[in-house]
Length: 253
Image (cartoon, rainbow, N blue to C red; front, side, top):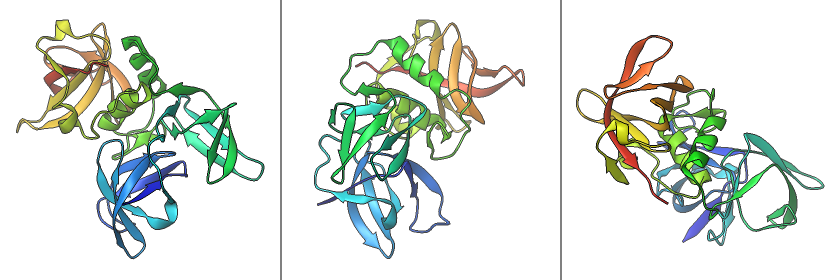
């Protein structure tokens, strides 16, 4: 098996092997993947974090022998950098870093100083930690397939908030809705619960994170906070319901 690692700020993952193809996902700095196929300048990969398949440009990643320690530490600021004597790499919230010593990390035999806060992936967390993380994305523009503070979609937001706090969940909203404990009534929801919404056909099309006190944070146009009740999301700007409530799930650590 061949493995790769992202050593750029982020790599777009595309549906087909073409620069014109839809971006369905992003791989952030330090995240790893298995290479399952090559075609011209493209590699088909499966991500380590969530088994998500797609195509990436072969010029945008490096091969690696080990993927075991890639997610031991998570970058916990909106943006920052890794700096060596001759190089600088900009990184974003949720990037993965391996073994750290004296605030330094090694990639490709170069030591980089870390400018920014790190959170260990096995560090215990409280439900309010999820909220603190989610708020960091507030105002981020909506981007289909995005997973960074500079562009993120609804399920990317929920996945990244949980990743930063040490819990891996699937990439897409419909898959996220299949895990966790079902909460039957909205008045039983607590901070950090995932709230899912469906369309007229009953398909899960949206997810947000419950903030408590009838508020939800979600990515719709941008990452925003709106009101949540038993009907769904009530947009505070348009004064209309935007999403119909389907199910609430609790992810336990």
